[in-house]
Image 1: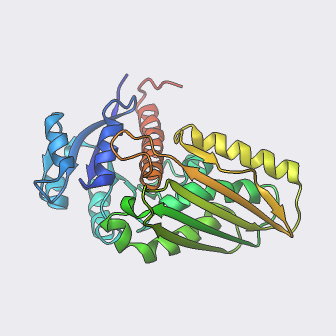
Image 2: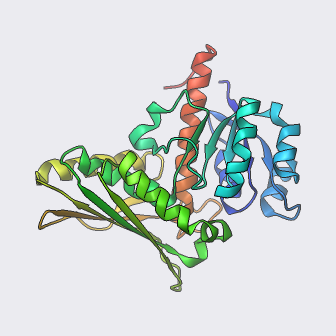
Image 3: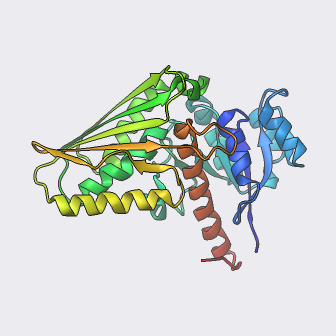
Length: 296
């Protein structure tokens, strides 16, 4: 079956995890990895797998742009803001894993079908990917005037990019709770936990509700969890949802796949897994437009 060619911009932890996951993807063929550090593990791994690399960042991407149709942005919010116009000029589809939020925010389980004809989409944040499906599950059953989440991740799994983008994380995650999750107002908090051994990603979702049909809300949440597990197998409820005084509280844990990153780095794993799911949907969409065979 034909595949759609793709590139990774950024050879840090996120980019390298994408590389591992894309090696045998049924819809996407990784053809280019761009970085700026010749000694980065991501670039060295790409070279060992026979993938074209460049250490010139976006300038190198321009040289090899013909090698891909889709680019995964795995750098930082500031870098993507500078790179996005280049991708647009070159006619490339950009799937942004930073909190730059230039394009619409997409959470695969909720709204991936709405963005297939757009050139730049954003994954928001790991916290958004973990919690927006739950907020959406509640809001499609009952009105949510206010939603709040607390995302707790292991300090060891928060690299320089995450630490530099803390402000963007809180703003973009809160925005996702509203735009994708369906809450009328949203708030997000991130906690970097230095515990040893490192903890898995844990998320608390609080939804103020006007009325509660417990059975309907529970069924909707269970459906959302099962939907996300289709592309993030380590996504699960830690306890049964709690109903108390006009509020629904849900605790979600994310265990990483452990392919490249450690299993406790569920915050990074859910972001890369969601990005690849979006990339696969774009690939199937492009193949169908070209008249190529697409598996169900």
